[in-house]
Structures are given as C-alpha cells and as structure tokens.
Image (tube, rainbow over all chains, first blue to last red; front, top):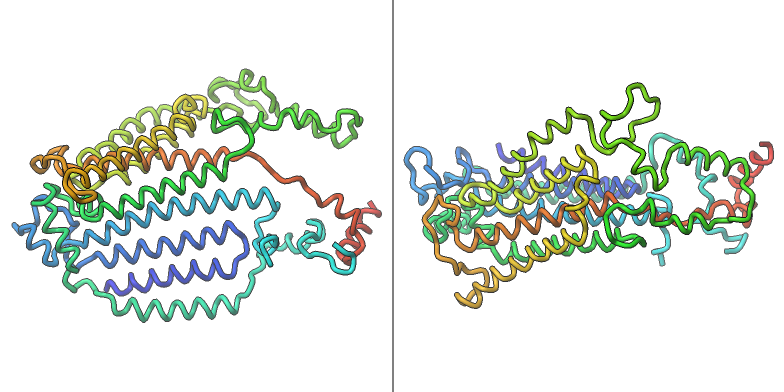
Length: 122
Length: 348
C-alpha cells in the first residue's frame, strides 16, 4: 500500500504549511519549511518504489535477470531517487540561508516574532 | 511618533512581558490557516491518489536511464548515471545554486571584524567597548557586572590560562569546564572513528559504479570536520578550516566542474557529454566524465557545507542597541501597560 506513503507525505506537507501560516516565531516557521521539504523526499522515494523491486544497481541482478529486464519494472526508479538527492541538497542550502537571515533579524529587531518586525509593512 | 498615535511596534519590551511569560506562544490567523491547509490537503490528496502506484510500469525516463547506464557510461549504478550523466546539466545548475546559497550565508553572516578567521567576535568590539563612558564613575550595577566579567575570565589572556583538555583541570573545580577539547574518552573515540569516516566518504566518490557519489561524500566530509571540531576544539582545526583556504578550494571545485562540463561542449559538441575514454565497468575510472563531475561535487559540497556551518557558528554578536530604556522615558504615559510598569518602578 504505497498510497499510505503518498498520503503521509501530504500530511507532512500540510503540517509544515500550517506551521508556517499560524506560527509567528521565525525559527518555527523555518522548521515548518523544513517539514514541507522532507515531505517531498518521502513522496519521491515512495514514487520510486515498485512492488518487489530491488535497488537500482545493475551489479548481479537477482534471479539471473538482465539489466534490460530490470528496466521493465523490477528496479526502483533511479530518476526519482536522483530528484530526492537534489531536493536534499537544495533543502540544506535553503535552510542555511533562512537561519542566517533569522539570526540577523533577531540581532537587528531583538525579537523573533514575525508580527513585530514591521518595517517592511507599507 | 505622536503621543496620540503610538506605534505598536515600539512598545517597550517590558510592556509585553505579561504576554511573553505565558507558556504557549500566540498563534495568528488559526482559522484562515486551517482553512487554507485543509484546501491544500484536499488538492494534494486528489492529486496523489492518481499517481502511479507500486504495480505501474517504470516511466520511460527511468527505463531509458536503466538501459543506458551500462552500455553508455559503463556505470553499474543508474542513480549516479542520472545525476552526473543524463541529467548532468540539471546537477550543474544545482551545484551553482548551492554555491549561491553558501555565498549568501557568508555575506549575511560577515561581521565587522577583519576576516582572518571564523572566530573573532570576542575581539571585534574591544576598542569600542573600552570607549564607553570612560569618565563616568561606575555605579553598583556596572561594578558588579565588571566583577562578574573578570571572574568569567573572558579576556585576551584567557587562551593561555585555560587548559587544553579537561583532563588537565584539577578534579572538583566548581566552575564549568573551560577546556576547548573534550575528554580523553571522546578524543580517543574520534581518533579511531574519523579516519574510517573520511575513507568511507572518499570511497563513496571513488567507486562511482556503486551507490554513492559526490553529494553523500561531501556530507560525510562535513561530518568529519564537525566531529574533529567538537572533540578537539577550534584551535586544532583553525589552520585548515579558515575562510581563505576553504573558499579557494570551493571555487577550484566549481572551476573543475565547469571545465568538465564545458569540455564536453568543446570536444563532443554537447554540454556535459562524455569526453573521457570509457574504462571497463567496476573500475574507479568507469563512467568517464561522470566520475570527474562526482569528484568535483565532493569538493564543492564538502567545502561549501563546511563554510556555511562555520559561518553560522561564528556569527558575531552584532546586536542593535537596546532602545527600550530611553523610549520609556520619552513616551512612558501613552499606554496603560507602560503606566502600570512605571508605577511598579516607582514603588521599587
């Protein structure tokens, strides 16, 4: 039942979204964004799964199958695993930038409450 | 700012104190947030239910990657083939997104001290601190604060006075340990573990036909640096982990990646095409240009993440001056909270 994985990833995404929308502590908002990122990792890895499949490694395929047979449904999807790798690296980079900005905001405004940082309001 | 129209953003922190003392933080627009989240959840569920499940056939791109990996690139691992071969251009862009993020972190975290090391915030403001009100006699508060500061020993002689490891400190000292390094147990464990970790990271990259590659390898390299920093303290790593060296290595890695990919355009007519002779599979050089890309990625990710982490760790204490005191005097009577606050102060 890989559908459960899909739905849990949607749940994770919504938990992160709700955090970002309702919390006003900047650190918690960054945590919400990280939660949304991690939901995409779960979705990619779940979408790559095929029932009874092996890891997409072509070294000695199981039961004497050839790489061509693996390609027809008996290995996990390597492209989606690659997407997941990409997403993790992007997620780390974005989180690092967010946290740096949050530290600078805290130092400048002396608060982490997004509602009190009003100088950007029109 | 007028007295009739106080800017709510500038109410003094003490006026907010009762609200902040509450354990649970305030949540804003809970209903709007819940409705929006429920809408997104419904849309996501509707979309995800129709995704291909575990019995579907692999999509065409995946089959292409699995079929092309061995004959086209001599790689036994299709994920590596996709990352550094078929979708090489995408990884190329991702590399420079990472580089841009690292540069943003470095620029945002840069403080006003001379950039000779990551850790310099304790000496950055020494001159300015010494200049504050030299004529005004110290009151009780200031004398107490200075005495406490001296007791902490946060001066420039501290480096020589404090022991290198906690093992050199006498047992039963009431103060917290001031040693930089951790105890002999941790240091012994790190001496045993870090070589294995470092070799594993390099192995992940060098044996490119097996799962691995530059991204996990770079993350392992960051882990090794962080473990050594935690166990041995910053003085043991500051000869290696310093901005000038790491940034040079990182940009050298970026140059290697650009050269690798652009040579494909020059020699083979397409960006990120393989221009190296393909070696037989299960050798270090199988995969041709993918291996070179992977090695460049190791350098790029390892140094980039290290730069970002240490830039964050060493961010200076550039706090803006606290204006609440003078504001209280200026407009202390425009809110009831401030009035109550001042009444309390008068009673004290």
